Length: 429
Ligand code: S3P
Image (cartoon, rainbow, N blue to C red; front, side, top):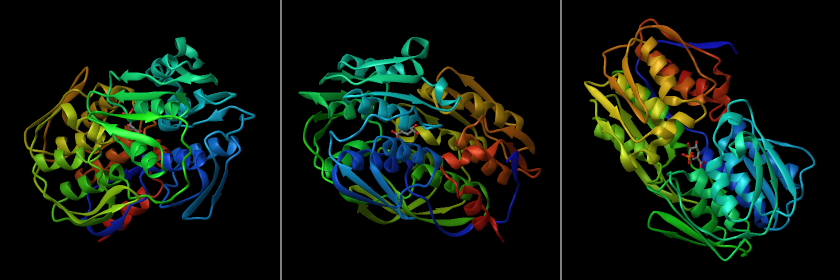
């Protein structure tokens, strides 16, 4: 598809249920494949990124049955993966590539990981440094910083790693390597990143414990297959929350959303900006907290966003930028340099795109300042090949009289194939 356009609509109303959480979906395949016995997954996200992970494990001999709506992984234990006969293509998925790198480092075989042109340009040294210190042999372009990555399985030793960045991909990669290492592996990060790997490994019976700001794992213990139900993705909910907030007279109930505290930075940020968000029917599903979210439109105000809030809302910044663009006053984002190495440079992409919509944005090395305005100008923007930029700018179209057209929107399918359909459902009069 060449482009998609959205413009001002009637109020958003109704009730929606979102597709499963992307991060948890990846982990359900990885951990299910390493466990003994069948792992049944309900609510798996049927996005391109997650199928990259499914295909990787199929290529290593794991039987994964897709019974539409339910995935069944026939795991044969920690030491049952087979050498893939071809290069594994992770597509656009950083989670697939980085977590697999740690996991493959301790396998008794050779493997090669590649991805699309965006993923091949993202930094991998953050994984190679700690996993290399555990004894891994991994080669890549640009001195080992870029894929394709060639991984030669080695005996690994546990390490105590103080990560310079708060990244669940780094933490999880080292934890997966730790499952195959001798002794104990500890990862501590500046601020706690999403902890889905720790939670799921724990429920599969791994020898793992959480620490203040980190995790410790001991290798060797077999995992047992489980039945998992994946909650709706709060990162997908974020687009609908902000859409509801910015279209006057709107009210939306978003059912069954994962509200793990390592992911709810978006709720804290929007509440601080003046949103009233109600969490209803709070409960636990397969070791993850879940709730229904009731959202009503509100006039937002600018705030400062920094520190521990950043890793807790890292994927939501494109849509947070839009909320800031329509808030009263100035929003300042700091400590968010990681945004420059996501699927695209999200600071640059949102500065360029909101600039075209008439918003005054100033970039800094690790963030931006956004001056709020009343409405957006109609314009045509790029997705930069990034699903979250594309979706954020389509939501931006709802606040623009002239409408916003997004070029190259196909990337939305990496994380949210039903996005347009759901948006149409809630914006129909
Ligand atoms: C993810 C972690 C985050 C996030 C990504 C998914 C994960 O990356 O941006 O979309 O599933 O572990 P970092 O941990 O590198 O910030």
